[in-house]
Length: 119
Image 1 (cartoon, one colour):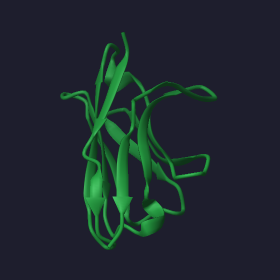
Image 2 (cartoon, rainbow, N blue to C red):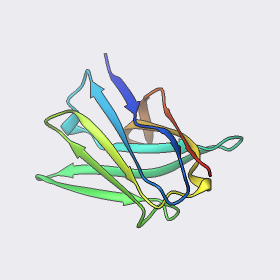
Image 3 (cartoon, one colour):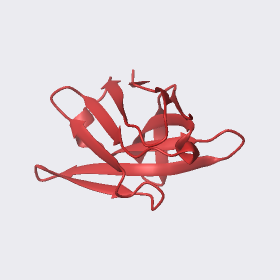
């Protein structure tokens, strides 16, 4: 069955960095676009980033709120999705989820990993 397992969250000071990982299994990882989505305390879900693999190259898209600070990447040989987060701000505090892309939305989600940005 499809499984997505996030890791790498934690507590970091403003301006710091974290790298999140999402280990995928149960499907052909390289055939799917993948996403990072977050949910801040008391708020709704916010799309963060999407990565597509096409003709051997990756195309990445970002929410304006993270553009220039976050980098999405994937290692298809390891079935793993990453999110490198730099220059973190308190407003980046959220539970971060990886989600498999499906037409019109997402069809599978991980359990999430908590990121807290605080001094």
